[in-house]
Image (cartoon, rainbow, N blue to C red; front, side, top):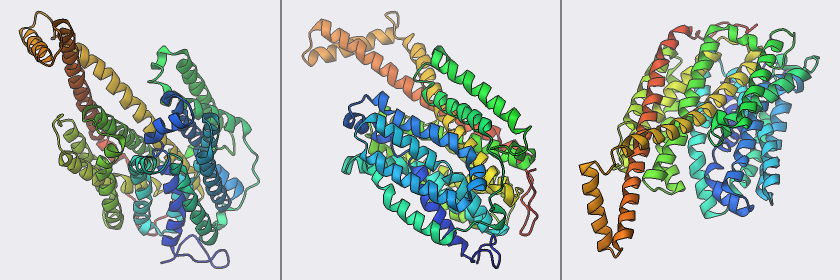
Length: 524
């Protein structure tokens, strides 16, 4: 099988699976870096003489820089050439990874993480566009199954790999590991990636105002989402200013992009109903996927006392299910209506989330393994058909722009999901503490009986009566807190489950993907 994006006299015919391997090496590496740093934050903070709160800027700086450059990937590829941009991004990401590992202090680490985010931003949309164009229409499901392995599995494996490298060697190795992968990726891209004829550089002007508005709007939004809960959202003047800047900048950017000839991001692609619906569904998928990814380890470490590495390993069955499901779904999707796979995936994923909402604090490993494993399979039923359907009617000339927006909104959905889930969890926990605590009073027979029993137990352990009484009240409040955390966890997972059920009807707004040979529809 040969790539269908080449013609005699323009570029050599390359097996598309070689192209897939060439682009996915760098993409997997970049997506992995969005989560691999999380578990190493305490070690980074101690090494560079910073607080753990200050060390979170190593995460925030990367995410903000990544979000700013990501929507521009399509325009950058058109302006500089896609292969040139891919090579420059991969080389820059590899060098900045090495610099992050060598960073002697926090300011330099943050600077190098910004460089890493800027270089890594184009990799996701570039790899997706190259894969969609390299495979024939009937084989695009297989391509997206392979691409989905990196996009879905990498965030799950990130905490596991990060915990192992940090515990076994040093936090610096979570950056050094990128160097050999980056070098191999550059070599393969240089040998096997070629720009198609329509990717020739166009003599268009640079919309500096559009770039500025987009960077300011997306950067402010990402920073708001990352710091909102920590700063009590709109109770903080800083967050209020970020929200105002983001809304004004993005509104101005949208208006400008719809009224100029050559915008940085072509928003007219949303006129295609299937694409617009698919992007919205992917945004919700990003919300639930990343939201649940941040919620589960918090629960494991808070209630069950798991160390970070063990929590990461406990979450790995989701990645295992996706690894097994993605290639299988990719092979089947060309034979059946992809919308049916999508509906089944949403329903099964919702059931697994409902299953999480029924767990108790007295659970074993297998109680967590099977729901996550099935959820991983359901994600392959979601991710592969959704990507294939969404991009099916986009012309090759518009593919880079469309994939940039697709990946941007998936990432923004993930950021909103993380911020939303953390906020819901914290607020629901406070509500449950107040509700449960209202029953622990001197007027409650059960509360007095428990207080007497605990006081007697602490006295038997050697405490004097006054100290034992204080210890008893502290223990009772600890029980209230523990139950509040558990109830909050269950409640948030119920909300996530309902979200998946609620968007199933939107599938009917999407057109059935065309068969092989179906004409691409331009986004203009």
